[in-house]
Image 1: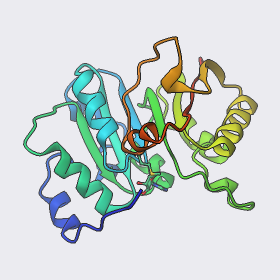
Image 2 (image 1 turned 30 degrees about the horizontal axis):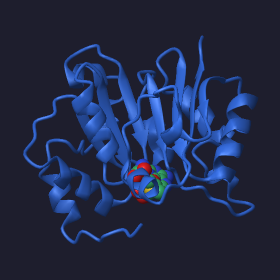
Image 3 (image 1 turned 120 degrees about the vertical axis):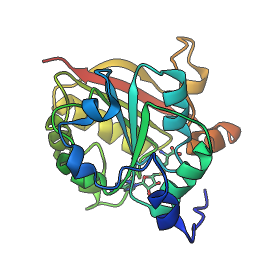
Length: 212
Ligand SMILES: C[S@@+](CC[C@H](N)C(=O)[O-])C[C@H]1O[C@@H](n2cnc3c(N)ncnc32)[C@H](O)[C@@H]1O
């Protein structure tokens, strides 16, 4: 899928009430920022934000934060919201590697949706499911750990299952073909997923948790 460059991305984000400009100021205070004690879910690499926007609209009693490194993608997500009023949604334009600067132990679920697969040998540590990332997530999960991952990439999926299980996560649901799964797993499609759906690609899914 092509990435569009948004020339005035900084300005669009600067003017948006959805983009949190200094997320480090809210570390440990996201519940008061949202003004409620509802669960907080975080999507890493939200891209154009279709998934997180739709999730926030569908579940008004859950707070959602979408994090995206690329300014143009984040600005496109802001544009997608348009004039809609979504009280339970915020966005951060930053590197996922810095999440421990933005969050204390306050996250209920992390969504990893069609993350970069980093297939080359030597790049494994960059995967959002590498054990080093799982260790970072430990520092922001409220109590229990909960990760939902979707990908079309077999290598990423296999390595995710391996690192999650080596880190004692339990698989509550696994699907090797999410769109044709008879269990009716709740699914909001991401932008990449919509494209893959048209191409009839299989989508791999895992809902993993570790209960403390
Ligand atoms: C393949 S796209 C998927 C986008 C979206 N989740 C979807 O499914 O449509 C991966 C996204 O992750 C973002 N990304 C990659 N590395 C990142 C990082 N270290 N921190 C935050 N976002 C990152 C990319 O900029 C890109 O938008």
